[in-house]
Figure: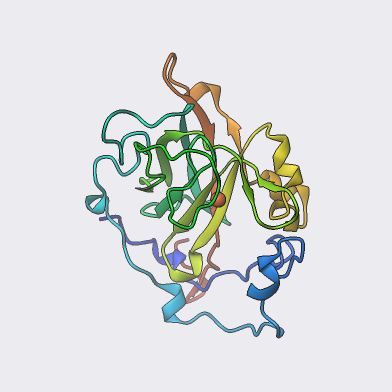
Amino acid sequence: MRNEPAPNHNGAFYQRDRSWHPPAFTPDYKTSVLRSPKHALLSLTNTLSEMTGPVFGHSMLGPLDNDLIRNFATTGDAIGPRIIVHGQVLDEDGRPVPGALVEYWQANAGGRYRHKKESYLAAIDPNFGGCGRSITDEEGRYWFRTIKPGAYPWPNGVNDWRPAHIHFSIFGHAFAQRLITQMYFEGDPMIWQCPIVMGIPSKEAVETLVAALDRAATIPMDTLAYKFDIILRGRRSTMFENRMEGN
Ligand SMILES: [Fe+2]
């Protein structure tokens, strides 16, 4: 069980900065046309149902939940370049988010998902399931071991390919803090050709999704490493009598 958030962390959440996040309607990403709202959004005040959420504990994790090289393996390790992905989950005020549930899923080294509707020709790896989860420690840190996923084609334009990526869902201290995003790999030229990535307004915002090769965290003769820090929504501080709570 993690500790409850400090009292000054109980305020309402900041509004999302919609100039930073990709707009819901980005026609070059075809499925966004039908998925996007047709009417202007209404802004609602946070209520208890957004400002709270379930509490996650390390006891809910299995011993291999953060090891995608082995968590579905039957006859040997998953095939592909062995990597560690690690980072820190912070809020917009730079505070670590302990006890966050970090879930991740990805294609195998050939770019193939293990899903019955997957139509790409690349082979399934029988020792690779492609999903796992971690819970952040007291400093908001997480890590997992996996294989580097491959790029894959998808039915969007005539010949669109997704850059190598890992999908993330991060559940912090409240429903309003949930973030679903994707992580890319430093140095991949395909990032800048992807219609989904190009839906993000600024280059600076895209760069926050690109994990840096982290030589310091590699394990010699074993595993390369990438560092991916994640920022969740912050909370406004709340007033307590005549001063900010926690001061
Ligand atoms: Fe994907």
